[in-house]
Length: 178
Image 1 (tube, rainbow, N blue to C red):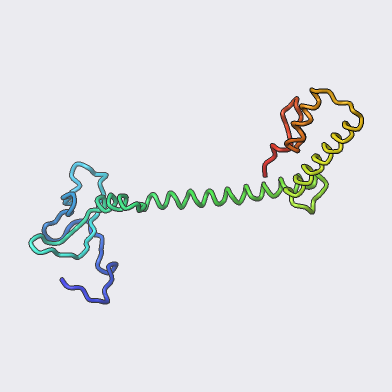
Image 2 (image 1 turned 180 degrees about the vertical axis):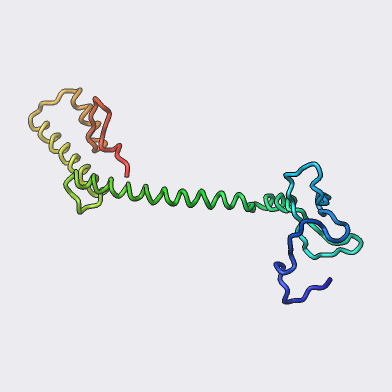
């Protein structure tokens, strides 16, 4: 059988329920399409319309083609459909989470009294204000000369980080994530 130059592979390839010519089986596994003993086996044959001298028509069953595609790293139809459904589900979840995130950011900004600034700028300004407050406290302590060793250790820890902490609960501004 000869192919014309204008003919594409898609025009030659067809799916058939049973081999039509000899040798009448899958060229890889030898399946002949009888489905005897296994009613769940619904394999079809891919007819490449390729005839090999002294062999006959080359057919591949759908199972062998699936195994070859998996070996190549390709996805089967069912896997692709499952992945499409999962991506669609995650995209809709992402939209919901983005909306919730925006509402949370707006709520945080309004609670902090700075609704026009982005929340990250607000948090940075809070940290900067706390650093300035720590520096002012340090300067006033030096002037007064009143500092004991335990308060120096705890205040130096807060100053080195630049973020206030509540030692009783372990909370600090540094634990906020956006």
